[in-house]
Length: 227
Image 1 (cartoon, rainbow, N blue to C red):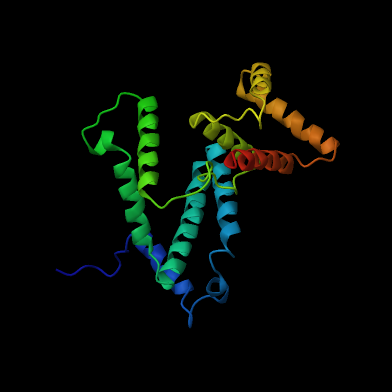
Image 2 (image 1 turned 30 degrees about the vertical axis):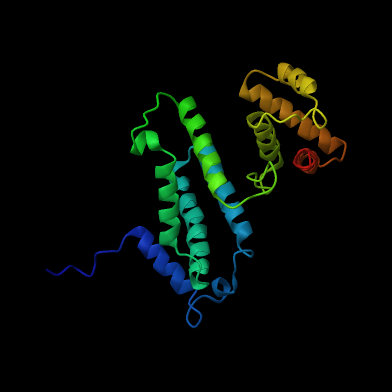
């Protein structure tokens, strides 16, 4: 049986082939050939932010394009890793697939769960067991990406403090946090207004809100890691 030459390969195979051609030393694109993992790291951040904008707006027409731009960054990094003899895109897919199957025994095994709270509890237990089997890592906040925006970073720092039941009394004022929580607006729009007013006030005072929050959250991390 013969197949028509007009039949296209799968979309992901086509993209992988295109990226490999762009990186081909003799015939590829000079700009793409010059790049390495570090030089295009900012591109991934930019593309993720553009994708988040389409998600926030539920702009499905542009979401399709932005998802492709994010995927391009993944394929590009995998291509660079393959060229250096580390791994390829197929290995990336197998690794994340195996992780998903392993962390969802309630779907792919016999351990049925009734609600999302139970799923999250099991997920955390499985992750903790995986870390015990893996190489030893230092620090109580080792899983927090320092590249997160300051507000997300601060929220994740406090999430870890709660999850690990850390004694953080020397670093943060739990009473102050409770008072602030009681004073926070009850709905998202009003909360956004409060946060906007804080950001605007920082602007008036010529203070960098992002830097201030990041530095303080990092101070909390550093002091608790030394405890």
